[in-house]
Image (cartoon, rainbow, N blue to C red; front, side, top):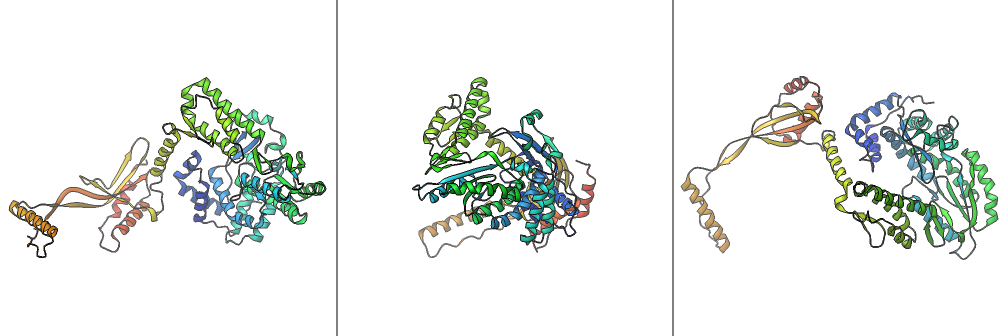
Length: 556
């Protein structure tokens, strides 16, 4: 199934664009920094593997999350996330032309809040501005991600790509899509955390226990896209064939209609269509039908007329987290508070931001009133309780980011494209060696210097009388110009200044981490000379000397 197509090609530029998108908002993670230090070599190696047909996803990191429910997450390697992003950049435009407006998740401008607002607008429209009865049918799918047949959805998506995609790299896209979707990360993963934690996970919610060939890993971008694609056929069936108004976020679906009996009659049809087209079933414990005036719970919010509230479960979780922080602050003291102040601020602000989306001023005020006095030394509460602000002197994360930014700049100094790279002129009191190794303890490498030239400086004449006459002439000329005289006095022409050797040498310099390739060094020197001199005469440089000197260096 994973056999290589005959005409498989992938460009470096497309991989680089996928890499730029992949590292967005992830630039300071350990995986991103480790990949970025040698990103050129990593992308070239990824391109070679793909074109040879021996690309295989690496080991993923498996861990458990506790909220809102116990679930299993797989984090792919940064290299594999580049491939997934590359696939997403090509199939997303196809999906956007196919999906209905009521489909949310992994779409620009269609997050959880947009889905809640869409459902609220649908209820207002169907109820004619809350003047008539309206019913909401909400259902969830049972073990959705783990019940997906990988082979079935892969073949379905590949047929869709072959029909809709018009790019030259269609064979490459199909090849990488097959490998990514058919791969089971449970066969090659690193379990993070207590392995006994998986004992509490139901069998239908783990890739380790689901039937062979089933299950998509939660945490991969391709899994989210495939989920939307798999349920898109049902979305069209509900809206076009049955004429219903829906709002769907992944596997959470809400249907709005004024006819209660019509919704009850539609439920068996929905079950049958989901099983026939997607091979998934409705969770019998997670679907209900009720009047909109009772409040509709959707994606952690409760919609009740024109108002939105945070669900009780979310509020309870927020209070538990806050009380946990307060307890730890009392037990461990000021040192622990200072070290964890940034984490405390980010966590509390996430809940305050969710409350701000609803009419929850009183709740925000009460919530902020529960913050322990141990934290008030490090934070400031905003006047309308929208957020809490960390005091500047405790922003350790900003200092760490600045340090990492400097390290990243130094690591990538010689890895930027040639069009953006230019050597700087360095001055020294003596002519330094053209090739020199350095070892700072943390970094080892090589310094290459070229284009040596002596800096000349003007030396004033020793004739004191001539210097005196020149200064007086300049003063008279300045006074005449200030007085507006039409005939200024004759000026004594300045005597030519002598240019003498200043004892300073100017040269160009480039630092390389490790032992560089001699041909790369020669190319950098030629590129710098072309930028500096252009078509004008340039100095003669013996490249043979540089090749021999670099080859003679020991390995760094």
